[in-house]
Image 1 (cartoon, helix red, strand yellow):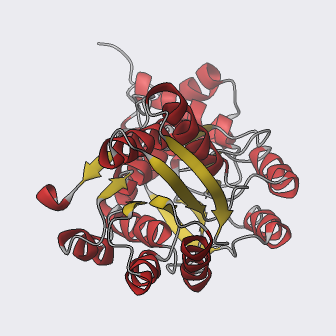
Image 2 (cartoon, rainbow, N blue to C red):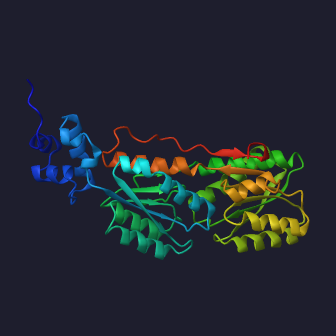
Image 3 (cartoon, rainbow, N blue to C red):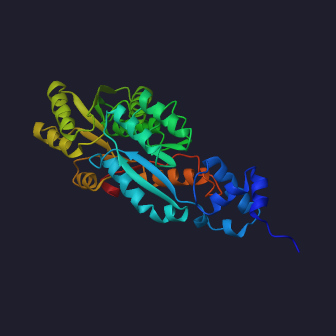
Amino acid sequence: MARKATARDVAEAAGVSPATVDRVLNGRGGVSPEKERAVLDWARRLKLDRALSLKAARTLRIAALIQPPANPFHAKLAEEIARAAPALEMFNMQVRVIHITPAAPAETAAKIRAAMRTHDALILSAEEDAAIAAACRAFAAGGPVVTLATDIADSARLGYVGPDNRRAGRVAGDLMGRFLGPEGGEVLMIAGMLAMRGQAERAEGLRDVFAERYPGCRLAALVESLEDGRRTGSLVREALARRRGLRGIYLCTVGAREVVAAVKAVGCSDVVLIVHELTAERRALLKAGSIDAVIDQNPEAEVRGAIDLLAHAFGRRDAPAPAHPPMIQIHTIENS
């Protein structure tokens, strides 16, 4: 009869000490993610009874740094993190949402460094900035970092989970071109912050598809709301007053209600409005015909993808997370 595997067998196979195996299997912490992953992997391979339940492993603490709920997309991210409780429990992981201030990179970098002292992993959706990237690299030296919805160069992140934002911009350009028809017209794009790589990529995609297939359409202006709904409304009013030929608005930030109010105030009922993120408010505006199309990037799939990626990194999920980006969805009045 074959001998049952012991903790010492696991230690030898994983290249660690028996004390390290004991710390991992009894959830006492103080072990690097790489060693913990190796111990759990070999414990499963050797069918060590205590390792068959992931509950034997220590609770992993994950910091999720996202914007406050005033931003509709980040509100949805927080909602989906809360809804992911069953998956988090299965992997014995806890996620703490930490709000960051838009356009305050030094503050965000400080919060990342503070999280290093109390968390095992980091999920981050923030602008591309040298200070933030440096803080991510410092965190990544001790635990995995996942960028969410928008990537950050030189961050030493484990992976990026989110849509192909350049393709999302192309989808917006194709929709706009179809709505405006052969005549085309000038289009205003409002980003939250162009320092968010994803929003800059959307602008590139929009321009590219206009140049390739809709020569009558032109990106007349690209402006930033700095994630302020009132500023978004003001930008639209100014653009409509200055550009009488404006025929389309592509909104990638907060302020859908303010944009609709500005368009109505000027009496430009024929302006095409395409926005991102299907919130309850935007669904109502879509049903009312005030918004022509909503491009939704499926925050539920993004949150689950980030959780799966981290679970695999810590050896708590056997199969790696899917590599393909979450699919964006298009909503019009007919499927709102």
